[in-house]
Image 1 (cartoon, rainbow over the protein chains, first blue to last red):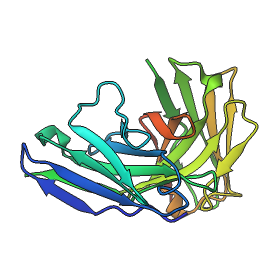
Image 2 (image 1 turned 120 degrees about the vertical axis):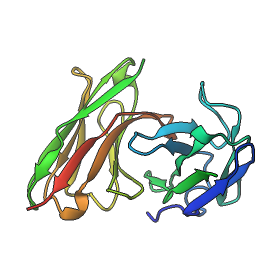
Image 3 (image 1 turned 30 degrees about the horizontal axis):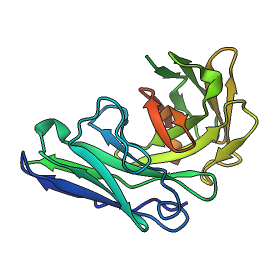
Length: 110
Length: 118
């Protein structure tokens, strides 16, 4: 049950795009389209932003998009806004009938 | 609207026990699986346990297997986490989360803080 691998931090200026990667294995990200992304501003609970690789829940701006290739999933945020500054976590279902998260990525809007 | 409210956190000595509760409302609780997830201070999210809607099947992370027990009372719309043999490394904010399609966590509670310290 090793954590998925995310970069510790990314940054971008308002209006720019950033992409956060999430690398797993053939036992999790690579085998299932059950990858999700969560946004967590400081001191708050996580919020679902992307589910099943590419889907956005109601209310999430279309600036947020997800994709997957092989064992790596990605979250792209376009048109960066100051309010996007937060920690972002990926998550995946695994072949052991468990779930695993990435270590988290801190997004800084410059 | 979906609401999940955790309670039962606090300070406990190493080796002690604690039971967390998660009161659910705004959805048909008995139709959805539920998870517990924790976050140690300054650290990332760690999945702990999942229980199916009927409570008959439960799954655990290796880090808590044999020490923690997830359960639910569908008549009370409440999820539980019984934590035994607590260690300092169990200090964290504990969240309950609603499952969707054995895929993702679509709603989260606000969390309850557990501190294991002598």
